Amino acid sequence: MTEKTSVRTRLFSCLSVIISICLILILAFNLYFPLARRISGQDYPSLFGWRQAVVLTSSMLPTLAAGDLILIHEAASYEPGDILTYQTEGSLITHRLQAVDPAGFVLQGDANLSADRPVQPQQILGRMVLRIPAIGQPGKWLRSLLKTLDR
Image 1 (cartoon, rainbow, N blue to C red):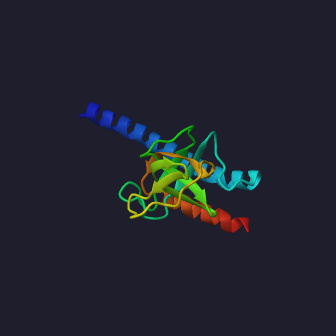
Image 2 (image 1 turned 60 degrees about the vertical axis):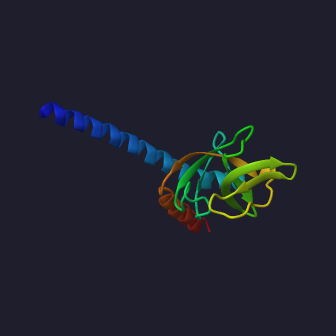
């Protein structure tokens, strides 16, 4: 009985450390990007090619839901099926790459009935590498608070 309890305690301890490290990294990302934006003057700064975004709409259901945090990484090339984030008119959009044609990248949200307007390569910020469900809500709140304090 004592050995079983000891294994559970160690497992719980390791799991607690992993969760704590993940939460600290998310918090650090959420603090870094607003500061980097202010210092660099870039709308969407990156950290060694990495960016983060919070999904705000349901256009990518069932793959992505509003409130999901996604990590994005720049790549040299993209393939149909990749989930890409691009900037347009001061906002970010994350949709799936359908095709590449002479007019640009053709992207479409999984839940949308039609494709977006063609996207130029310089608009692409990167490919989604990781999705963390629902954890983006606190980050969204923190960025909103920092934006309010920035005024």
